[in-house]
Length: 430
Image (cartoon, rainbow, N blue to C red; front, side, top):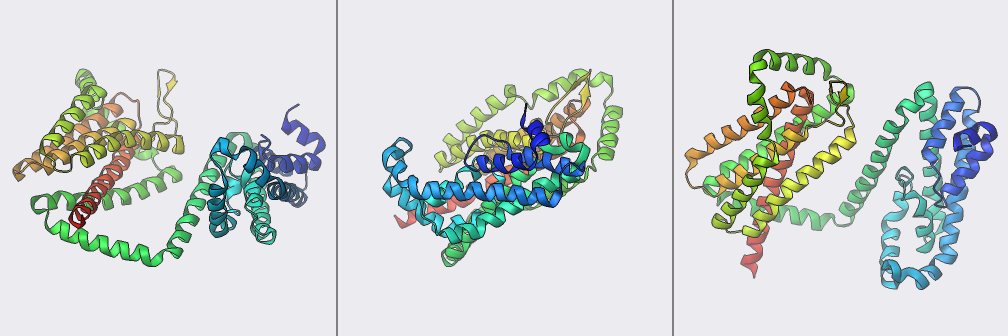
C-alpha cells in the first residue's frame, strides 16, 4: 500500500505523522502527499481547513523536534564526527555567525527546497539560534508551505496527476530564487557603502578604459547594446512562453520556410546543419585559441573566457531546457523532448559570435568588421533554418536559442572587458 492509499484510508493521522517524519529528514514526499490531500478535499473526502491545520501541526511538530535534537545533541555529534565532513569548531563558529545574520530570515522559504528544509531545524538548533526567533519564522513558513500545496491539489482537482510535477517544479524554483534574493538583499544592506564605492570606482575606471579602447570601442558598445536588446527580447519571450502564444508564430514561420526552401534544398540543409556541429566548432575553437595566443596581451584571461563561454553555454542550454521542459515536434511518430530553447542555435551564436569578437578585437583593420559580423549572422540563421526545415525544432525554439545565446555572449563580452579593467588597474598598483 503506497502513501496515497494510506492517506485515503487513515486521513488526518497520516497527514500529521508523515509531515512530522519528513521534517526529521525521512524520505517522505511531502509535496506529493499534501497536493494529493488537496485532491481529496476537492473530492469532498477531507475538510480543507482541517487538513491545513493538521498538516501545519505536523510540520511544526517536526521542525520543533529537529530543532531541539540539534540543540542538545548536535554539538556532540560535530565534536565526534564533524571531521569526516570537514566541520569543526572553527567552521561551526562561522556557521553560527551566518545563521545569526541570515538564517532566521530564510526559514520562511526554505520549505520549498527539498534537501534543505529537512536539515534546517537541526542546523538552527546546532547553532543555538534562540527558539523564539526560530519559531517566529519557522511556524508561519510551515503554514504557508502547507497551504500552498494543499490549495494546489484542490485547484488542480482531477488534473492533479497531469500538472502536479510541473507546478511543483516551478515552486522549487520559486524557493531557490527567494533564498538567493533574500541573501542579495541582506548582503547589500550590510555592505551598502562598500558596494556603492566599488561600483562608482568601477564605473570611473571603466569609462577611462572605454575611452582608451580606440577602434575596439565600437565592438564593446555594440555588445552592451546587444545585451540590452537580447534581455528585453528574452523577457518578452518568457512571457509569451507562459502565455502559450507561440502557436501562430510557429505555424506561419514553418510554412514560410518550407515554401521558400523546397525538397531540392534537402542536401544543402544537411550541410547547413553541420555548421552547428562539432565538425566546425572544434577547428574554430582551436583556431581562435591560436589567434588569442598570438595576438592578445591578456592571453590567459581571454582563453579562460573562450572555454567558459563554450562550456557554460552548453550548461546554460541544458538548464534552460530542463527548466522550460517543452515537448518538441513529432517526426515519424517520434517526439523530440525539451527543445526550448534550441541547443543548435544557442551554441551557434555562442561559439561563432564569441570567436568573431576575439578575432575582430585584435585585428587592426576596421573594414573587416562588417563582413565578419554578417557572416556570423548568416551562419547562425542557416543553422536555425535547417532545424525548422527538418521539423526537429519549432521556430520558437530556434528563436529562443538566438535570444538566450545573445544574452549569454553579450554578457560575457562585457564581463571580459570589466575583468580586463580590473586586471590592468591591479598591474598599475603593483
